[in-house]
Length: 218
Ligand SMILES: [Zn+2]
Image (cartoon, rainbow, N blue to C red):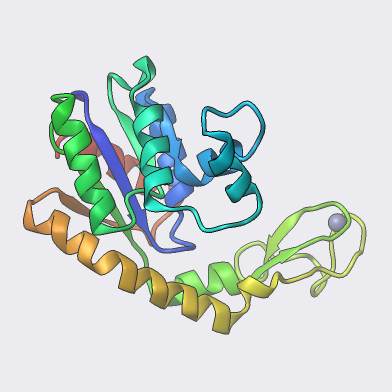
């Protein structure tokens, strides 16, 4: 694969993070996750200015400027010279244009965008079926990886919990917000023939083989 930035798009529950990490491992290039970076950035010793760090630690909204600065700094490091995978970024057209400018300045060419498409029903089952044991932390799914006894942990018999944001109404809202946010982004990349749709309904291994094939011969 030639040096390239790869962008992963996918709805919550589509397995985007998992596939992005897997692909980074298989290609030997960094997995640049803005979610991970933002969590890391609020810890002490980060390269962020103290004022920004304090605001983020206080739970204030992370501005475009901050996320762009983080991505710019991270992808400038030598380990990204042979390509990198962006996960969770860009989310807006302004951010997509930022990526274009950044890559152009470095002579790195256009990004390739992997768009993981998955059926709404499958996402709902993955997310609404999720249950966690409050004692041992084990994660189940009532549809795909159910406990032996209804809603009870196999290991310690505790009653399993569902997170509030895994409830169906909340998930439908998150999915709608995602669609609305991503539509212009997809159009932007599709127009320039940089978007590649991948069927995300199959097995994890089959999907990652398909993505790898795509990246080698886009
Ligand atoms: Zn347990």
